[in-house]
Image 1 (cartoon, rainbow, N blue to C red):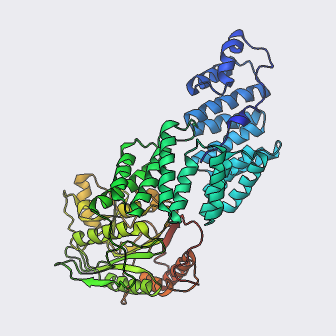
Image 2: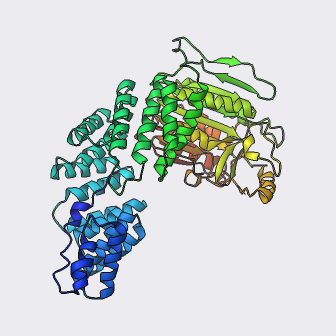
Image 3: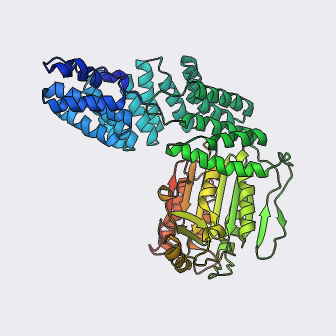
Length: 570
């Protein structure tokens, strides 16, 4: 979110208190030290001044500071840090520490950024700008309580700071304080009605409260503002706000069952050029959701209060599937997709995944989940069940996906393997699989808790086929599954998501010698424990698997959950 620099830049020491050449005084100086100078001209002017070798000490530090400001405008944070470090060496100051801290923040080095903001606060009077920036760093680390404390200080210093109210509201939303978040976002909108971002965040809150009409109104106003007044802040990537606004309004339309307007908004999202990771993640979600609502010709009817999951006959070689009644989930609904594939036709069969899926599905039903369960599915059945689940999960509060069976990593992307998959050198092998990135993108929505659990890549017999295909097709196969940070460009791990693997990235999981795999046996035992927070539950599962396998297998997880999540009530 928005970070603040300009006002502190004015605190930098005056440059022209020492004599210099006529050219530097009349031309280069103003170009170097004027905030509105275009970035390239600012960097060029400051560079020429440094080359004159006229200034030393504090004056030279000021030149390096302003050149760092120019690099910051260009988004070259490594050069910002280099020049700011030189300025600090010559003359430490509050403004330059804030600038360098902001550059570290933009690089994702949040701990270093916080240290710089700490030093900045020690060197001058309390600054609302620095408290705001440090709050952003704490928020990015997921320490929302400390972020709120810093935003409190920023608001105390400047009660008219719309950005501080906005970001404090976002932090409160992350902690589940929707009413507190709503109050802060309302105040940000009152202070600056031209800002689209508070409206976007308020759209998400209305969706979480299931007030979809208000969500759509706020989304529409955010889109109008983003079009009429694009952000002038150099730290806001082009089009990112507009892409976010369209995505959030589309999700509200979809949750309401207005698929026609949802399709229009998803198409609008995809038509905009995305330049940053967040926008690309939104577009990945829009692409998946668009395909889902395109398949949905009309809203599905309201659920019957007595509806129960029913078994449906499976076509040849698809195994069996149990699906919930075809009705939209209420906002409080917890839904799960559980698939276990073991009866493989072209690679070594696995005895345990069907047992694992049944055990996990039973444990989830016992704690109140509506479960779509499939065993030994071919690609067509697996794809249909996955798409049906993703469509219905749009209205769920908690969505859980569990998969047991073969999985493979190809070119850094993870794929789940249907029972009829046949890998042949020179063939489009990934077309026979289910892309995990698609599932993750389809679920990426901050108002829902998403939990994805994969007990896959069991002593993978497909490595040889992948390697042979790779030699002629340019496909790189690797052991195990890839961590989310190394997934393909379409992958997302948005706010409110937890992903767990049965083993560490790049390693293989054991199928087990009993009726279940070590991971799924532990998971089915602990997942229903009342009052056990989900990450604590996975810690217990990890400890049991490590003990059972004598350290041969270490389960792994990555979380961006917003607050504590309990699968079984306390």
